[in-house]
Amino acid sequence: LFIQTDMKEETGDLAERIRQGDRPALARGITLAERGGDDALQLAGMLQSNSSCSWRIAISGPPGAGKSTFIDALGMILISRGHRVAVLTVDPSSPLTGGSILGDKTRMERLSREEHAFIRPSPSGKQTGGVSSGMRESILLCEAAGYDIILVETVGVGQSETAVHDMTDLFLLLVIAGAGDELQGIKKGILELCDLVLVNKADGDNADRARLAREELQRAMRITTPPNGLKGHTPVLLCSAMTGTGMAEVTDRIMAMMETARLSGSLQATRKEQEIRWLEEMVTDWLFREFLAGTDFQTRKSEVLKQMRSGGTDIFAAFRQLISGKAG
Ligand SMILES: Nc1nc2c(ncn2[C@@H]2O[C@H](COP(=O)(O)OP(=O)(O)OP(=O)(O)O)[C@@H](O)[C@H]2O)c(=O)[nH]1
Ligand SMILES: [Mg+2]
Image (tube, rainbow, N blue to C red):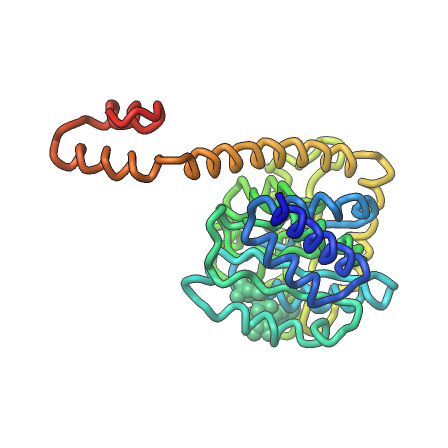
């Protein structure tokens, strides 16, 4: 009991420092969140109440589309408009490439020097709970630290998108022209998730091709169900994150969409549904951990596996043995 009280005080202390905007404390809190477990939930629980007036924006798209460059440009505009910006990344490819973290540091060069920005690179592939482990808690922590705009970069076109969509208010898809098929292997399911599509790198020799890509994408969006029937078709805009062309318009559009969502109450309603799914996940995770931590589960498991290998039991009997707690 003593140890537990002690731990609580430590978490409380960390929470307080995060609330005061202490950056190392925020970084430590996020590490705790990524590790998961009771401490992470306790910390998130202490800090959750401050998060009602933030905007959570996902930036997704194929590798190299310019997501980090875009976040750098968008972040700078947002800061110039008085916002405080936190950047989190979900990078399922980092264990393989290993290079993205360094890349993010150099490609968010301006933002990384800003006092009103906080950039958290993706954890280096040690995640155990799926691509977005601890992301929801991390978002709450950033909000508690006073960041009112949370940008979540997610690499690739796959599993991570749905997870990130489920923890953000607005989902942006960044694509580029001229990579063969304009949809670049983007699955229809992902087009359905997005609220705004941006054709990036609309500059120099690429400007014309970007315009064509935009038209093609607009056609594609017309045949794709919009995320919300009332909102109409998902808009497709052009921008150049590198030169800054179109970035102010894109920022205005994003802000207008967020404002509309908040005023109509759809933002709050969506967050409530997201929380309900989070609760379900929390319970599942807890059950999973509790079960695995069960007194003699590992012993029983190795016994059952031995039996299976020697032909002493079949898979269904083995399963019953494992979950019933009887060492058969
Ligand atoms: N011409 C041009 N190049 C750009 C633009 N935006 C990004 N780039 C370049 O495209 C390359 C990839 O940019 P990143 O911002 O790292 O792209 P990313 O989507 O974050 O890449 P990953 O995180 O590795 O998936 C870099 O060399 C950028 O300089 C743009 O608007 N125009
Ligand atoms: Mg990147």
